[in-house]
Image: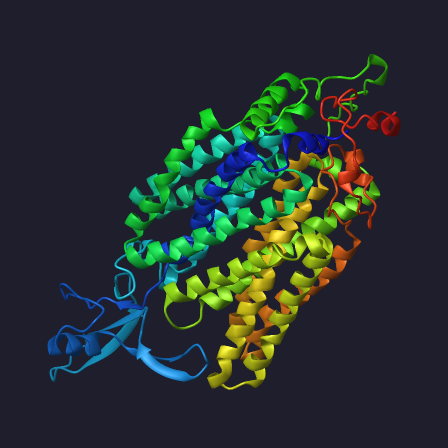
Length: 571
């Protein structure tokens, strides 16, 4: 029997499992907050050069004298608005001064324009952001991209390294380390005095979020029964969406970046209590041969759930039925995913879909986030779109299966991305809201596809390398997330309306292609979680067995987490 059969005795989602699951979900609120926090703390408000030799200069005009000095010192320049229409505004990056002509006695002079290094900012939206504090504008505006990428780079490293750590030393230790890495750099980030210090803190914050998201998701799935796994995989995403909506509220109420960062960084100190109250993953303990510890946790869960579990359910069977352990391998754990051609092809498709889902997800966020209007309301609407995408899965995943739902959601997101190009290329500025609407609907599909591929992958990867594999998949997702801003930047590199539409065309076509490739992945609905590589390769592409027909035989129990029939396959 497999470990999933134990849930027929213990209960698939009893009181104990709900407690453990909630402990994995709550940190995801703060994972979402830190992932999206850069939108607010690195926000660039309207700005211009400060007037030379004018004390107490502000962005808003204070008096007639201030306006006269502004007209003399700051040049006006031609610009275009978000719809491509020409406009004139005060220069953001240049200042000018009067230079008298040589040997001129009539007081004639000429104006010289040059780049400035001192700025004043509009404080209507935010009193202070790190961008305004460190003058990350004009010739230093690329530093904002570097700061954002530092978090994504940390996210990438954390997803991979902490995922591997979770497979090697345990899920719990990886989770605790992620919590510590969340608390220290994020609180310290409110007191940094240089850009370099800020980037280091954001990098470590990304490492922590990569660990929290990957390890929390895996632990949430590993201790629930097969029929509840879909709910476990999606509800945790609802906590993510609630975190982004909470961030919109907090950012609206707290307009100083230091206080905002501090408010969202201190509460996770409470998660240090997990050291004492959170159990280790039973599946991981069984795979490592620590049967006594696994049985202790199961017996405690049984008492909390009010059921009786036979004490020999996890003990070894008869000596002649003992399973031969897997051959030791010097290969890096993730490399086992490429041990056969079939497994390598499946893994490549999964990794590609993670990268594309992430790229489209963040790309649409950037596109919708740049629309005019209230930044807090816009971000809240984006969060609602995510929530709708996640909620929709609760009604379709168990009815239609993981693969069809994923294919439909990612392909529909791609179609809506492509459709946004028509009002951009052929429409007038008055109907640009249609492009925003289509992109927002696409965000619903992108959110649904991202949540589905997360659950789908966790059910496809075997327990022996599940966390490492999810970490590697998340690594691919982070690469996709880092690439997406550069795809969006193509709008600045290619002239005309086609240049503005090009990023959405790329996002759309990539999403459609990845969705079509996902057809070659096996369905996992109603399947037990695979424990070994061989288990995962046994899955037929269209198999949907009835797990309720399985008999629990406690006289032939689990042996270190492996199916007793594994010996016949691997011998």
